[in-house]
Image (cartoon, rainbow, N blue to C red; front, side, top):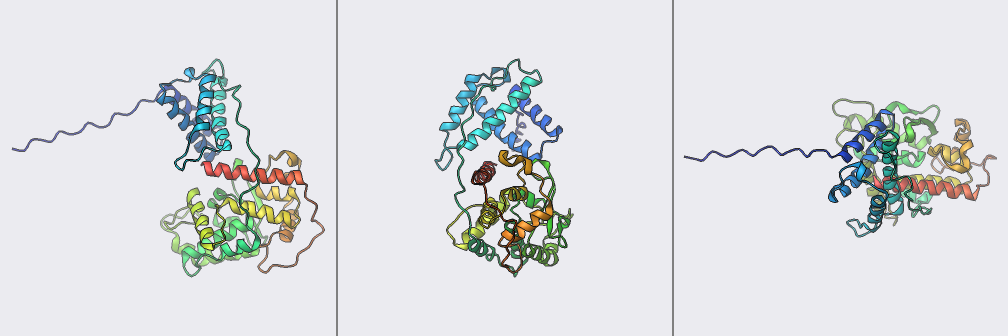
Length: 357
């Protein structure tokens, strides 16, 4: 007679320690106070790293965390090596520690702690570097030519690349675009709930609009499956793109173009900013287009009229028209070198944040 098999007991759930519960409460507070989902998720990741580090050392409560412990964690971040043997960049270290400062400030402010152990934690200084790679206008055109537009996927990819190059929008801004967000008559596209939950309307070139129109008419219906929420660009599964999927898509065509430069979606933001600066665009206009509203040197110029933005865009962006015109305008001004460096440093910071995510 066969012996009855003994069923395995279900795995025991790991009880949350006090530190993890505090982290969850903090994240809930961020969400209920209308912080963007991207901010909440990135903070969740950064704080999870810290919680794992604490658990390995038997630290389970916020009350056990002292300034020396936080400084020890900071040293650990400095000496940590990734799978490829490279250290964490100082910007990455700074970002992870900033999340910790936010957590302990919240715990102190809400009387979970009597003293904030992170209040005097000195964050690592961040280098202001110029972008490693920037495409020339001819290199950008070479990348745009790579998709095979004879099939729905290639047609979609060409429209995506054209949109990145034409607008310099962030990858999640592109991923969230809806079919109705582009205005062909006005030559604009509206970005809804961009970084910082801010809406903005920016110019988009005729060529990019033409490719979006062709993709929408000929390819999108073939990619859409099931419920359609109106998202403009759909992946091979008929779903909205995730960040890493867009990065992989751009990287694939960069490699295929054989121009010897690597990068992801953010490379187009660097490229557009650089090309427009080289063609004489005012730094304030570019910052409005990119959606930068907290650059110290130009804070008072954050509200630039869309008509002025469109005029400068048409005169300075290589892909603003179906056929490149010899556009010149009296609006072109001398670029302030300090403001230009600030812009490029901000773009580099954004790129580093994307690498961390």
